[in-house]
Length: 335
Image (cartoon, rainbow, N blue to C red; front, side, top):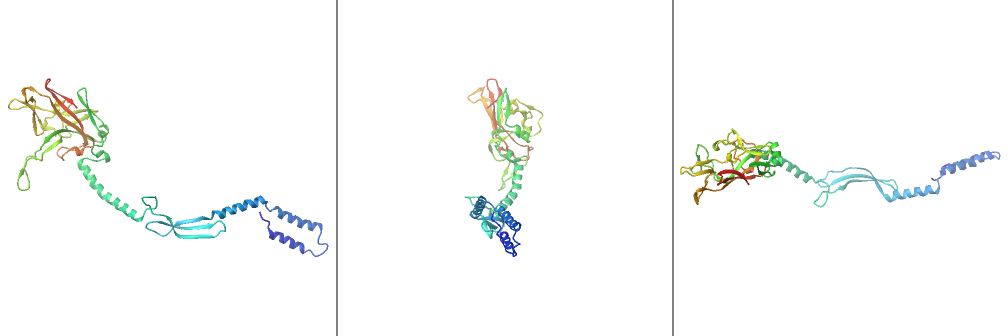
């Protein structure tokens, strides 16, 4: 480090004040020289001076260092900042007010959210808050609740024939979540309005609902049951499928009722149609018949509350058939 010149000058001044010839003695001169030697001992080497100079040059090359930063005036698009910095070369302080700090975000780069974007997000949140109650009402009416489990066809289920009975796969989680099975037939259907006639516009009476062709509900929530993975069907008469079952059967005979027409022809009812078991070309022989059924799962809805369709389902339709063998005159399950 550099020598303290003020101290050296003071020593020289004290030496000059000695006036008498006896004032200068080896002792006094030695004391002055010792003070000079002690002062010289405090001076650094040339290596120290070089290191200090290198450090100073580094400070000068670095320029300024930020002392403090705080948010500046409000702006709708950018973030402004008040910045205080020090010059590392000479120690001077510089300030910058409302300096552009973070630019607004665009589709090309990240950045600050603009005020209008906040307005848009708040509007979107308010609209969603208004829509959600309506959506929940619609889902409750259709039996579509519990998030994605209420969306049609989200859960894939399948039916297989195992040792003459039907087994269903993929339905266990839905059953655990409170969903129940419904049975559908692929038929033409036209339900009655009931005991009263419905008067349409123009005064015309209407005893039946509109015609429907496709997958139509058979019975009600009481018509089919899943035990483990086995499907069984209500043994109630066809006219009492909307009431609690007196029992369940895994036999296909629970799904079909054979009756005899007045002309003696054995037949079955299938929606709006009547299917004869006899071969039209040879009335003395029976014919093979295949009837299409399917099972799907939805929220439990009691009979008569609303029309249950495949749109209510929380699963896919698992299709199967019952087949009439003309040789054995028996019904079996098939695919």
